[in-house]
Length: 414
Ligand code: HAM
Image 1 (spheres, rainbow, N blue to C red):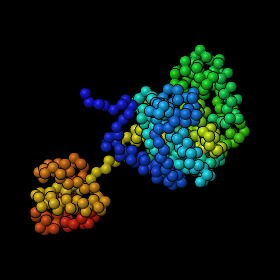
Image 2: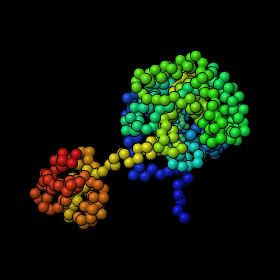
Image 3: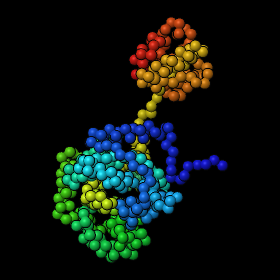
Image 4: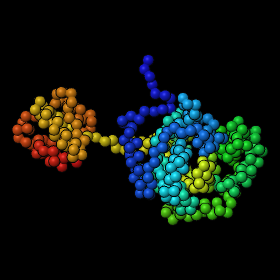
């Protein structure tokens, strides 16, 4: 019996990688323009890092982490998200001391033991960015502007931006009490998870998809009605900056996030095109996280997008790469000359293919067709003797005579 991949862990086949490369290249380009540098952190961290940052009473920590003991008996976890590891690195290497504002981005695999379905996997990939050191609302707006520019440059008009504020340690407890009192009156209508979480993480009830909970929480109090003066002012100013830069958004007062570290501004980029996996990117401010992890009181804000979900939205909109030229060869000396010519053309930056199976001209040209080569040419003794060759444009079959020389051919092929 042959061995297959683990459920929820996918191969990325060559037909799919061009769209991934397009997403990654676009993100790097946009992030660089906003002053971000790449950071690469390990995929494995000590389990405690995620418990302390994401929160013990979240779905991620309670149910979804790939946690194991290594041979030395240390509890380790495959990272379920990127923010915790990046903040751990920021503290460990005192990056905050090098520059009061640090702007970091990362990309790579994350792991969550969720039920796999379209757009939801156990190994998935995030591209994320984090800014630490500034609590000014202009930074929230800069991050949101960057995210919206990224989707624009990806050529997507979905997803759309929703924002909310989750308050701060001064105003959240008051809201939490109001919500708990509201939920207590509707106990019987709530699912088992939400009943259990009433004391540990009541905000999650607002995000529960069970129809009974959706109905029971329809008139629940919203955090926005309970914001303290400073949080309210912060949220107003974020909206003002977004308006000034003409970044479209809507307010979703019911948005709660699945990770506990958020304070103030939170946001999601949502789409109706991916069924129940509506969040394509998400993030928010986490002003207490760095201190919570043992670092200085450095505020932060960031986001991450799910590459698989963006790739699904892009579909086949990303044009596949194809060879510029196929060099078909007839006979051994043409093969030798063709090999050298191919190398010269490749050095000039062209994708060039030639025969490597000793096939007939007919089947070499069939392969040129299959590869969707833009041009083809047949190199034989006559062409070698005359120093001229007929270059065929595969799309319409038209041909023109060109000097048998790499530079001349390259000029015609690009
Ligand atoms: P998150 O909302 O848990 O936030 O995940 C961010 C994005 O990752 C989601 O919007 C989704 O596109 C993608 N994603 C999450 N789980 C899966 C999955 N099982 N399969 C496929 N895609 C998935 C965070 O992870 C935060 N660290 C974001 C952040 C950065 N907040 C501040 N800075």
